[in-house]
Length: 313
Image 1 (tube, rainbow, N blue to C red):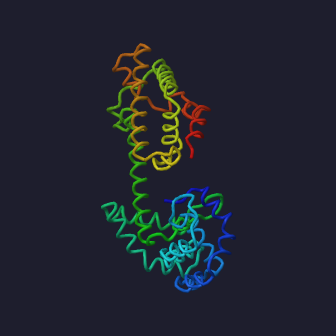
Image 2: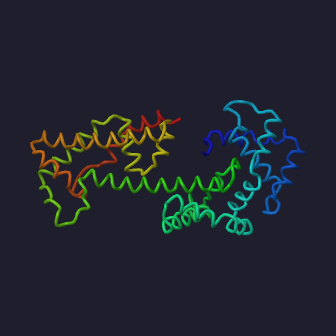
Image 3: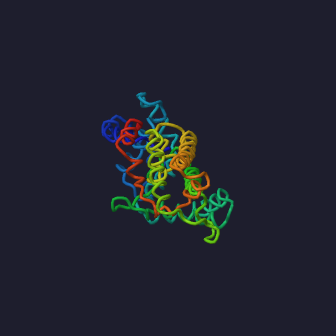
């Protein structure tokens, strides 16, 4: 897992003092065994990478514990230094490092992706997508971003790559299930046109608008935040879990319950408005484009925002 942003910021602030306190002989030893010079890394860059890794993980100690020089040395010697400097050189765009990375990791990466997906075609697509990310084809704020920067040398680079592949695959499956869940919520709207029931008339659509608004307003702040984060903002379960400080499985259960309860409440609201059960179910099959409901306004109101800020670590 990537370290908290606050830890990284604290690490950068403490970096100069810690570097000055570190045994220069140990740094010389690590430099010589890392092959950093081969990939064009300067000595200062190498030292900084080491200390960023150390402070990010607090040198393998519990949070708040102050490491001794011996504990720092033990942590540094336990890093996969060759993998760490290779990853950083690739992230910096060194062509020689990328050639070495491809020769060493490309085929194992493809084999791992095929094993994860159970399909050669899907596996190769997954591996190609990750490779594109690693090469820095994604941009943020106008700059190329390379996920290899989050590799800190604890464990092998190939192990980190396999874990990253697995997470990308899980995210893809969840996005697919999310789309299916949305379709199920509106009674499988992707059915063949000949089998789709007639669309509700204007009065039923107006009733559906009110039923949805009342159902969403009846959700508590946590449920509205979950629905907004997952369906509107397209955040993963892991991202939401980190905000709330809970496990992914907890988020999944709460999101499923919130979705099902909202749908049931919409049906109840429609029946209270005078529609029969069958007519209420048919109303849920309306084309969303015909509705006049501002979901973003309903889900992302000030109360939800306050809950999110309160839940954030």
